[in-house]
Length: 343
Image (cartoon, rainbow, N blue to C red; front, side, top):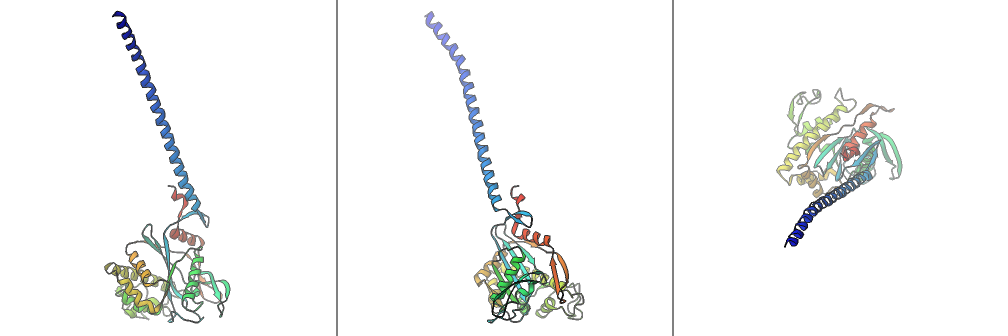
């Protein structure tokens, strides 16, 4: 009995010695596994980070010295107001200059849109063709002439799209809409009369347009507000008239979008009404989708390109854009600085 009791006591002491050792070993192993798991997680995280950064770097492009990443899901629309009563034609003739040029850029990812008014006197590369339609290459001339080349229809619009695209570094412009300036009364009526503030002196042209007043333009007043130039003493460079045109477009757009929010069929009514006077590569469904889509987007503002106003050797008005301003406009519309992608 005594020996058995002695054997049992010794065994208990052995177990008491081994148990802490096993616990220590288990804790050590668990700690090692935790460290290895953390290392593996760190490795996975680093690999994912590197892969993401590599993907960003693979998309990086140089925009006049600035590393940028293109935005996704962007669509661009060139809107043209033509100073010719013949909006379209079948033969090669002077198609009418662009009196108004505005680029609408929609970002379907951020659900925003931005606008870029383009000075009609901007000096840039414009492609020319002879009377038989043969390509004569490009000339540095006012961008307004880009639409004047061709038949006043699709050919002229595509030439204007090319000129604007090249001016902005080759960006893709998917769609265009060209309407004769003579259609302004129809547009004004569709908008329900556009409300603007009169900032110029129209006393010699239309006394009903009183400087400083905010009025809702009737159709005749709208045409005067948008087109008047010759009798405006401060409008020798077209700058004041272009400012009024873009102010009118901004107010018109806001009113039309309000109408579209209230009536989903309104956009198609606008398209059907303007279709006989309009040249576009959009059908009614695409136009309605654009307008109704804009009602759900946020207006992210208007981009301005600065430059120098002057005269060419023939006495025509010119606008020489500032290179940095053009670059900044391109980036604002189509890119993000690459360093923002990794923050």
